[in-house]
Length: 339
Image (tube, rainbow, N blue to C red; front, side):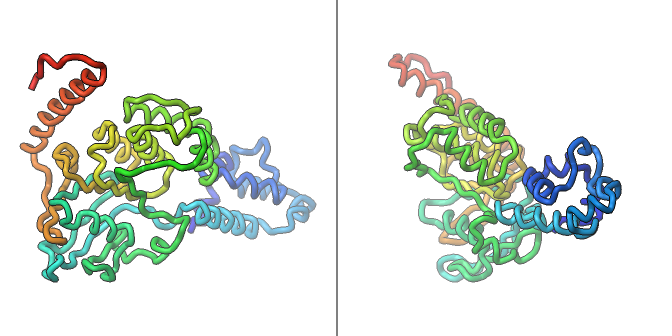
């Protein structure tokens, strides 16, 4: 809940910038804020005479209390919980497929950290992502427990359709709506009550084109986007517009996007990012990697300096492969490979 004392010190323009929908409250309750946006709500109300206050029909304290309540309810409706900003996620150990305790006690992941999840196909990488998405409380096959900000999370993370703790990105992203990119993003922006959707839409499209290398514009039908363009659009949308503080990525190595740029975009928006991957480039980009074996977490490793140096070599190799791919697509003969 918004703290009343600090809220009273916000100027009207600050309230409107932070909570665009507050304008409706001021208008509906005939609170005269025009030409007074540099003042606080308290300053404005104290300057109203008895007749103006009678017209509003509330005392000064009631107006502030009702405004705070209105903002809190709107934040819940659009999926933003003002009282539960996610600073950390903790995974408490459970068991592997044979019932043996996992070989760790707990893993704490902070905002803007990247964690890669590696292991053979079928080892349990997706199960770990599912435990996080479900905020497991020793009630999944692994018996793991997930904490948010070092506490057992509120059940609303599981059952609310608006308060989404997790955004998930996977290989398979297909659009079925007959909309342009602009119309699709506008719907999402409106559902979030974004104050300036045109600016946000432009930023998302620019970021998506930056990731995919296959440019498209706001008039492009979303059903005509390629696989790489679709994933680039959804990554940019998740980074810029989604309020979900945790992003789970399930095997996007063949997604047709610049993976490093995609990850950097997400962490620049201060999200916790977990990636289940077979790609050594993605695995070594992470701050830590979780090694899965037989359904359990076998090991937790911190990326060391030698691996960071090898990552640079892998990036050079990746760039050369991308150049070869482009030449093949353009019908050129591959004569020299600089590896």
